[in-house]
Image (cartoon, rainbow, N blue to C red; front, side, top):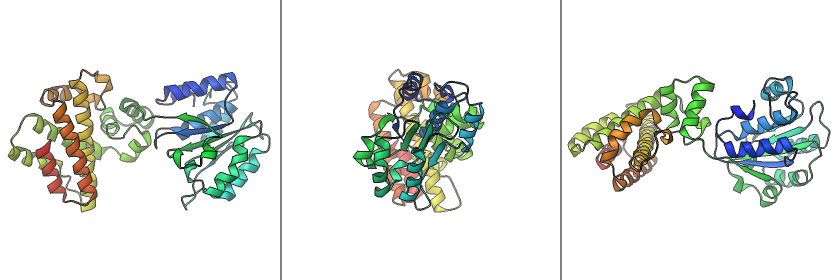
Length: 332
């Protein structure tokens, strides 16, 4: 996969591409950032670029035999280690990686060792890696991938060049869902609005439930924007109630609706302050959001955020979903 096909992350991708093009890529790297934003994918793209048979090492073509085998996880010079069923990366597999790093590549230009969820390396494993990270073989690149780099020992972090990845924009998540995973545009925008900039989280979310959640959240916010009486808002709160099969499922579904309400409030505040439609998390609802914006000044938006946070906290304490929905509807 070429760098151009990775969604978002323009700055770190540009940094990596320039380093690859000049032949100055550091031999030990730490990719850090939120879960599900594409860090491991980029690590694989770097491995492809280093061994691509067509690009000369500056980028990956994604089509040659080496690129295809790396994508499939079958290239003999690219190793990917991740936590075992115990949730840790123990010293035995790390020793095997260290041994592999000491040898020349079998068929590629560079041997690439990717350690996913590197924060799960146990203390012995981290200690064992130190010398290899500081003085890897001339043909070996280590890429540690972590969403919690602060839990790695300082001695490990100091031996790696850090590359930081941020959350994706909602539009980038939606585009990825449509182009790569064949969601409809409506489904993609509904899920992206609550995925917190993570394509991985968006894929876990599914689609139908989030379309339903966004419709319910939009209805509740419209009722509040219309200045409806408390009685009318209580009646509208029924639309926030998911009516699932179990109490746990009801709490989870109501939480999704509340998260969407927070996303819509954020967009309302953006419109109120003259933000562009292209920056909205729910860009496909721009007309509806602009229609509601006059009813929400800064104080009311902040009050709505606070109410949504309190409602989510109440659900985490197993509060009654009907009570939470009614209270939130009145306090928007």
